[in-house]
Image (cartoon, rainbow, N blue to C red; front, side, top):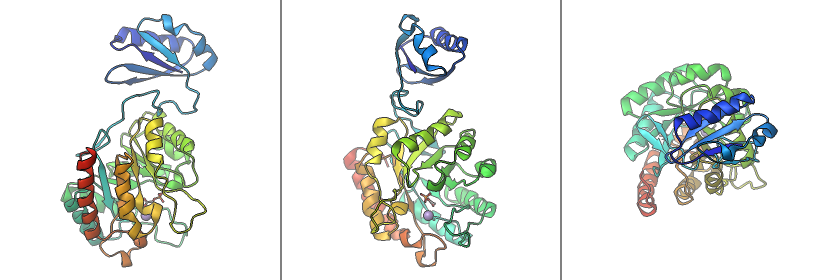
Amino acid sequence: MIIVMKPGANQEQIDGVVHRLAEIGSEAHISTGQLRTVIGAIGDRGRIQQLPWGAMPGVERAVPVLKPYKFVAREFQAEDTVIKVRTAQIGGGVFAPIAGPCAVESRDQLFRTAEAVRDAGATILRGDAFKPRTSPFSFQGLAEEGLQLLAEAREEFDLPFVAEVLDPRDVEMISGYADMLRIGTRNMANFALLSEVGKVHKPVLLKRGFTATVDEWLNAAEYIYKEGNHEVIMVERGIRTFETSTRNTLDISAAPVIKAMSHLPVIIDPSHSSGRRHLVTPLARAAIAVGADGFIVDVHPAPETAQVDGDQALLPYEFAELMDQMRALAAALDYTI
Ligand code: PEP
Ligand code: MN
């Protein structure tokens, strides 16, 4: 149940609702919007519904939420969530270009890529120190040494960075380095990991599971949100279909679908969805046209030597060309980039 307060309801009236919920053993989650406060009530639905909410001072209405997720739903918060990552912004009319190598392989590879994507206009650097590989014999990442290199690159190029977290036991350590965490497609339904990143104060990029419906994906976001971390960004990265001409099928409709169902920002990954370099630029351009709040793109200075995902990495000059096109599209579509 969501209890919508009247515009201008005062603190005493809000406290009154919270107190009433506590009396029947229910939890209140408060969302303070620009116009009004909305209170999510979690507990025995029957008991919550029985209370005469319309008669309580400051309450406008009580809305039953039929979906299993509540806090990430549009009904809970009408305004878009806007997320700041140090100097960068995601959402609120700002398109966030996130770019960098799939994996950190060496200082030289990372620094060359970071400089190139910064010069081209990326606002956040990507690079992983822990890689979820299909084969246990493939390169697994440089672990903490990779994070140290990313932290150095942040200082050198003035770019916040995002890195993947694979294991609940690493959340604290990785949060000590990274400005933003990423949950990968294979871990979207790892509820222990979701709850753990829900406890830290770092924004989280939540990739869609490659076999997950939008509902399942929003429920995964709810696991993070519910623990107190409200800075969740949804990432559409392609789903598995019968089509084999691309690595995954980019569900471009997911961007406007999420926008309608949720207040969370949504970004597109044209690299892991297509898996092919020549498809990355057209799909990245589509991101801004469908109303996404950013993209995350693999870039590598020498993709033929890449330890991971070389087939889909843009060369630095290709990324720079893409960014020129993005600036033209942003101007036409009234975005800041
Ligand atoms: C990645 O972004 O490097 C990655 C592993 O992506 P995904 O989890 O979407 O496969
Ligand atoms: Mn990758």
